[in-house]
Amino acid sequence: MSVKEKFDQSEIDRIVEDEKKIMNKIKKGKYSEFIDEEAEDEEDDEGYYAPEKTYRSKSNSQEKNVKPTMVNKFQDHKMKNLEKAQIGKMEEENQHKKRAAVIEEDDDIPVNDDFIVRDDEDDFEEEKLAKSKIHTFNNKSGILGTEDIYIQAPFNVGSTTIKGSRNYISWNLKGKLILVKTVQFDHVELSFSLEGLQPTTIANKFKFTMGDINWNGVLLASRGEYDIDSYEDEFENSEQKKNAKLFYVSSNNELSWTVSLKDAKEHIVAVALSNSFAACATDKNYLRFFSPLGIENFVLGVSQVITLCAYENLLAIFYHASLPFSGSQCIQLKLFDTKTLRVCCDCAVTLSPKSDLKWCGFSSNGILYVQDSSNTLWTLVNRHVWACVYTSDSNLWIIGI
Image (spheres, rainbow, N blue to C red):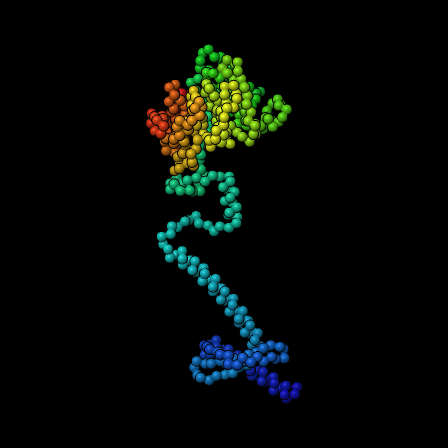
């Protein structure tokens, strides 16, 4: 090694040591400011630019000119990367602190113990829950809550739950319909309260589950879309077996007719029979009217029908006006005149708090009565006023008034 090379190496080592000392002083706080006095870029043999910087000390007025080399250039690059990472981390922590501070500052905000952080899975589960369950109004506060709603299902007046081998499809002052299930076949027993009319039996090949009876005849209905295999092989077209059906037979067995709904997805939910018409409500929000000969006269639209009852030319339609509020059903009455095709009355039905509609019917004088599940009997005084007739602690089964 020549003398010149030794001198150059010793010079480089001295410069590196001076830079280390300066960096240590900067870290200790002795050098806090530095100013670029010369912007001359000098390129070394490796092709790196090293601008000359002047460091000024707070403790004294001495200035030292230091020319960075390739070694401390890499150190500066690492320091800058560390500073960027630390700055990003500090900014993220400050954002979290600000968010927490905003929540802690406002003491009036109500605390929700059920608060959760939502994500895509929660949205999917909520959408799935909304399709399978209906949300209701909270019984305590009256606002929309997360409890499952209870909406009274449609029922037939004078009927019982289909359980066991004998069930009442309809029972009133005119007679009764009893559904009997046996090992061999199912049938419906008809018995009239009038002595001159003989009891009879009808085979239940259409799976009747609802009906109505008066002294002129009997109306039976099947909901529709049952298992095809459960029917007798009577029809060539299997699709015809799925459709809901209405069956009428007169009390003297001289007249009978059967009507099948065209749409297999339309299900009958309630029926009513009068001397001048027969009516059925479906889950398609249709209210179909038929003549005594089985001809469909007209169709009305009424949504969410609960039950029907008829008297001469009047039809009482009970339906849900809205979702239940504070645990009570919101039921509306629409009294329709089939002769004039006009609505005689459209008002809310008064029931006991948190009770269901249990029975409804007309008296022999044409006065409308309803009974709720709290065993309270109400009557319609005029078009908008209900009066309480009686209330009882015992469970009463009303046949007629």
